[in-house]
Length: 387
Ligand code: SF4
Image 1 (tube, rainbow, N blue to C red):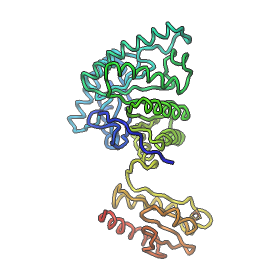
Image 2 (spheres, rainbow, N blue to C red):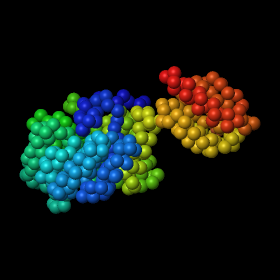
Image 3 (cartoon, rainbow, N blue to C red):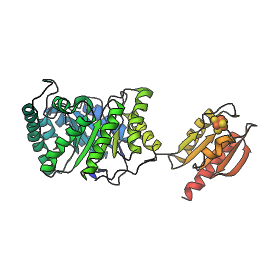
Image 4 (cartoon, rainbow, N blue to C red):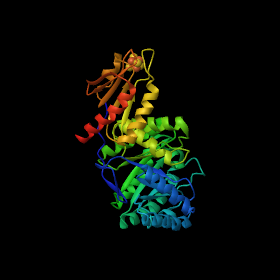
């Protein structure tokens, strides 16, 4: 069963609302040093054009904050309103300063004040020392975020959990949730609520388990922070796309997720297309014509692969990314049934001709592929005009 989307509160990231009734937004991150202003401006423009709705830049030192502000200024002058997020690790001081220029600051709970390298076992007192340090530095940071009305993502990464959390709770979903809870307790203390949470791992099962556990705990506490989804270090190519689709797809089907980033070791623009496909494939966002097609078999009497490609290119050119579902099926065996919820279905006949169905009614019988292409555009337009 596909769950209803988990009800979350809306958190503003610049002009984009994350959570609540907002559509699930797509994020990405530039992959060059922030000091490269021209390169970042170029990449962000490409991302924005491609459909990226929130963009993140790595801030590695105080100097980067100046470059971040410069990049933002250039983009705004070019009317590129995409919200810009500062991505900070290891330094509460940098995170604090980023609040002045960024629309949102992403921190990593595991390394905000804890050291990742050091002792691997902790007495109760040593654990408390770490916790107190986090409370102090995080409290200062969140108070400033509250004053400046900025939003914050508390990122929990399986690969960079604080060693004291791993020692106490194990290296899995429980430690990830406890790590988030520790940060949330600081936010609750000062009544800061502009929070988005993420629970990421490169291991898909761990990532899914951590998000499910966190959301069930948050629901028990009646806390409804939006969730940012991601599978970290997924790599490149098909495998990375499949891992991301499994991880994020499972959670989206659970109703979990308000914004997402697909992490690819490729040009970041490629991440946007994958994110869109995941959202459309899960039925939570529609970006354009959705084609469904049978894999073909010995009963197929026409070149289904080439007509699928031809139709996709032809229709996208003629009518653009419109909200339609078109099925291309080899034969009648499962054709009509499988295509039942499509707006149009093209079904092959044993004699090599094709028939076009609209809502299960045959509108063109036994015609050539040229006829199908020509008429389908016309019929699609009529349907869209009547919508
Ligand atoms: S729809 Fe027909 S042609 Fe396509 S895979 Fe099924 S049986 Fe084969």
